[in-house]
Length: 398
Image (cartoon, helix red, strand yellow):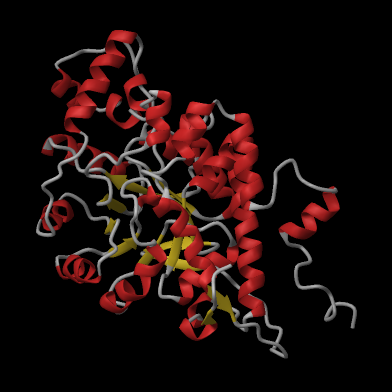
């Protein structure tokens, strides 16, 4: 009798915290952000936390979740709840990945290597940014038992683009995510107020400074690995600024990218259902609904408001990811109920990284896993597969 009456969170991260008498890290999303703000230099925090313009889109992303209420269900069979999913062959202990985020060394000197370790500890994946502070091979080596995906910002030079994709495949990455939502610079007042552009100072150039083709384009031979001196850093920053993205990409270019690799190719940054349908027709193996966390276009539509129409357009033909505004486990559930197969988080994992490296990242993921698993059970589900819009009801936002 004692076993069957045990609280269902026994053995979870909540129970671990109770036994430990607390945690070194905050549990609430706002408290986590505030702790990171107090720890980081102002220019680093504002680069991570900031968004475009008046930051209306970033706030809209978060507020959109308050327009949905979850339907609580009772007297259900108490079978175990399993939040795990498999996405394009990648097993995930929970339907949450770490979104690509540039220049992570602004949060912690261990940067993306620490993030990869934290994700692997919880059983999920990091989608490595193109503008990583640590070369992609070193990130893979830091988490040899993890599952990593690679974000490609398609450079203006085809040889460099092919090199980055081939390096990711060789290093064991399991998918390529084509960045579609950052082909032009957004207007970001917080960065302008500090006069701080991290790439100009050598942050986020790890994948480029480790690529021979990049230095051919720079017409420069560095005296050592990475960016060993100010002159090399200046050359690298100028070259990166010149070749970072190719803004003339079209859906037809997906065939070219897919010819370079055996890995599945997803497109990130899709908010229009017509575009989603066109990209799937052109060969995309997955779609990620995102507005880049509000960092690009102010006065934009909340990403969550775009999700149902994109899900209807994709109609289950390929996996559908979602990011922009996820802060809680119930946010994860709402996104899945509206049609996503998994979500990605950005700023929260960077705040966790700032506070505790890999351990801080794992803390953020464990909090999401426990809250999501609890919400899944309390809404009458035991796997992610049975979630649907019928689990939600429209409510008036507070």
